[in-house]
Image (cartoon, rainbow over all chains, first blue to last red; front, side, top):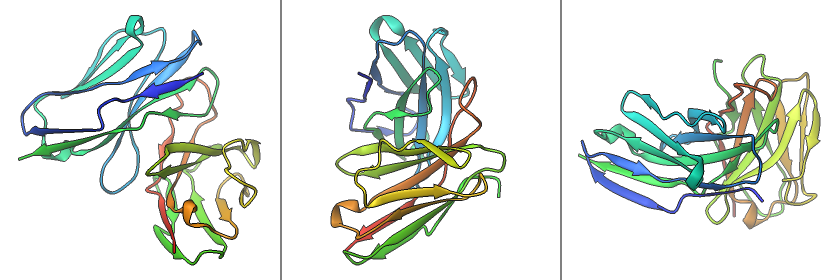
Length: 114
Length: 115
């Protein structure tokens, strides 16, 4: 079975703090894709990153970084020097190879206070 | 427009009425998806279109739910005889055909409230 767990329901930090959002997934597939989406108050899901199962290199994009570890089935997301505009719900998702269906975690609501 | 467009953005309907939700995907995106986001269930897959056909309707929760897509573009999700448990945000997404580098782009959703 495929499953994504985001154990942190809500996180509150003060601006400029670093924050890590956890994502643990379950799959028996050898080829799969992992995603992070951001859902601001406006409602749309904004694509942040897509990573395939064969690429365990960590990725950095500005203040965002992702740590993919197959050994622990985790794909964690870190925001460095958080800003108020980072306040949103963040979803981690899993997609099987050649599939179209995204299996989402329950989301983590991040509140960045000024 | 440049992104996925959904209408209406908000819909309040009386229990038992039918509703239609519309999705206009990104031009050139042949794949289209409907998801439902509700408090108790999180984000759930409903249906997938490739062109005008729907090879996977497995997420539709009951036969009151149906969807169609015409001209390989606009899609309509119809809920008949709405129930209070249908209240949710209905999200539409589109993408290039599934394969390498095909992320889905989402619309802002339609918030449906059944009273």
